[in-house]
Image (cartoon, rainbow, N blue to C red; front, side):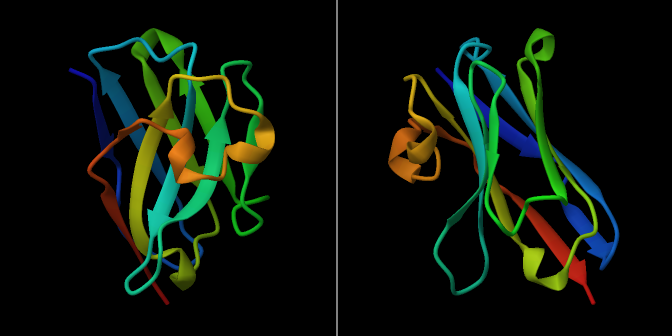
Amino acid sequence: QVQLVESGGGLVQAGGSLRLSCAASGRTFSRNTMAWFRQAPGKEREFVAAIKRSGGTTYADSAKGRFTISRDNAKNTRYLQMNTLKAEDTAVYYCAAGTGSPITSSLRFETTYEYWGQGTQVTVSS
């Protein structure tokens, strides 16, 4: 059974940094697209960043220049380095994995991904 487990969330002051991890088990995801989404209280879940099997990355405008998605295929783990955090980054962050080969424009859509983690809370205090 495929399982994605996020970790690394927590409470941080505005301007600080966190690194989220998404560890996959039950399947090797080195050839798959993986992404991070987030959901703030009272809002819909939104795309943050994705990394394709080729290593290409794409980011939401809100994440560009501050967040970096990366991978360690040997560990079957993906990361989201978040710098210069803002109060509006407060949300539950989810990792997601897809088994297809989506085009770049579809990476922002939840339907691209078959597997989801349970989420990790990130709280940024202002």
